[in-house]
Length: 598
Image 1 (cartoon, one colour):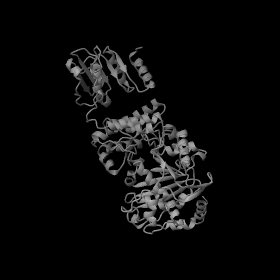
Image 2 (cartoon, rainbow, N blue to C red):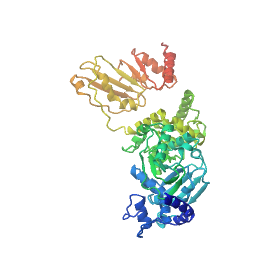
Image 3 (tube, one colour):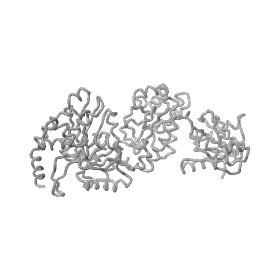
Image 4 (tube, helix red, strand yellow):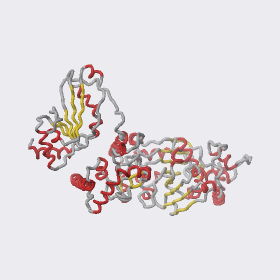
């Protein structure tokens, strides 16, 4: 014990001399295929001690392990949890070191080890955030191999607490957040601190000097963020420093980064699995990507591109991940882009707060009408979605410098309200993520539908249906109507008529179960692109047993009365569904107003 404590004192005295020596150390020989290593001892032997044969360590040996423990710990952790791949894929890799200390600043040049894994012409940015360090920005000298490969190693030191940093103008979005011996339990604003880390939606690596400290980190995170926030790995670190430090808690010594914990992110692990954004892998053409619009995804590939999307420089309302995808969509987009600029210049592009909803949708309808008149045609569904669901701060409605939820990619906040995003996580975020994933999954509407067997669903009755205001979901879900076919008697026919101005005109043939076939039952679908009052007066009209309005949107003009009058003449039940209680009340009021029913 005495010898180790004496070594601690001597290393502290030698600190400045050894740091200056380490800063001059060149890492151009790393990594060599023939110099394998599995822990800090073998790494030290291969890359520092080399061919020198001795059975003792000098002060420089201890200092070297302390110098390189940071980047080696990160590399080791990422390899253990299979997260190494993004290192070589990203052009810019940003690491946030929270609660940064002077020792982190002294060891900054060692991050060239990690830079060697970055792609050619790539950049590694180390952002050190903490109250111990002054503000600083600098580029590190790197080896000639990195220079020739166009790589850069950049330091940004920020003198502030982490939750203040993420809302500051200096903020950079991280690829990973690291806390080397960060003392979470001593932070006065620990909830803000941890919620700020969670909002980054990236991996978190925490190291500690002992197993007890590691368990304290785990407990602290569970207490603040919930028991379902679970790490990918918690273990002893094979690449800890071998330099002893005086430990005033135990009155002995500790070694930096002795234990490690790594999280994929700080979200509920069950929620993270359900909310992970899926990747579209089907055919990429206007027939697929124009099926829906999403303000925070590339319109063509439906990927967020790490939040770095290029807005159209004409209308600023649609985004792309690169110039190639922007050019792909330009053929369809250029005309509405010009029209948006034209009506915006005439102050016809209405922007009102999203509440009250009726005023919001009325203003959007005015914008859509103005655009339709400017284009001389009706807007496509995705073009109307561009107008209705524009990029806006969820709090104040402004559209500049927005920070998007990194889980659902459906809500954003401006710099002034970025902290509000923590209140958004939960069931609302989960449902929005599910909505986006559903739209991406079924983007290719020409593909084969998922099929289900309904041969166990039986009863005896007779039904006929007319679905008004039908859209793609109504058509796509047609096979589910076999459930009602089972309610009919033998040798009966179920006819579903889908009517709407946007209903797809396409074949709807599909097979029914063997029980229905043996009973002589059939189901037929007909689709018509017209208003319901026009359908009733047309030669293709068929008398319905039931009229259904599935999430129907009334236009609040004279056509509503004509439509409802046409429905009344059918003298059959009417079912109306809506997405909210407010919509139900609106529909009831409209029906009572136009056709005087109670």
